[in-house]
Length: 330
Image (cartoon, helix red, strand yellow):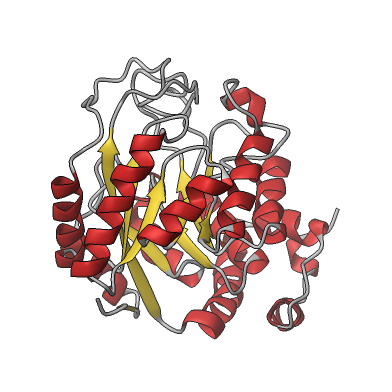
């Protein structure tokens, strides 16, 4: 087994920037980097991150457009059919409310606004409704990037939403192919890959990452990271499990700040030109070391994560600036 001390970090960075995929044994060594060498891993990763994105950080904001009525059984999710979490439950918000959310996103410093719906996949009227919202937001706020997260999608649906003005579709792989049946049985890993392929075929940008800390092995994390690279994902959100009372994973707490940072470095080194975003659970799991995330990520969420709270724009901007970075201008 390769040890982290045996990696020539300068050479690794040079090869990553030249487009070479790091070897799997190198990926394993990165994920198992000794804590006392983490500063060196962060410095090497920062070189790769800044080669593509400089010292800017893109702000993103989520909108829970339909809450708590999903028929899927994803074990991490407070909105799934098996969840007993006490959360708001409501059907699709009106177009007016979705537009209001876009305005709030801009006021919160966000460059990207993602409307998320708890559902297996959109019905015909859902596509029409969200398409109308995208068109009207695009007309009022043309510089705001629009993302939708609406479950499994076919090519026709993706084509229609692209025409309406959506730019990105989020559909996370969540974990490795091997571990996927442990967290969901109502659809498959391959169903998710098919949606990603439909999104790309429609000319939409892909947004797909995963959740670290659900009980998976290091090998599963590595498999997920390689999948995001080999699927050429445009934007990779990296979540760190925030256990929610009432879900099957409510007692799962396996992460340290250092483990989160090593995972972020791995995803950046395998995706040197893609956006990598610190997503749900960063406040809980990375805590006082959140500023170190910017060595790997170039994007971050503000104002929470659907059914869990998060830092607001003011707190997040202070974090970014204290780390020596700057938010992308709106």
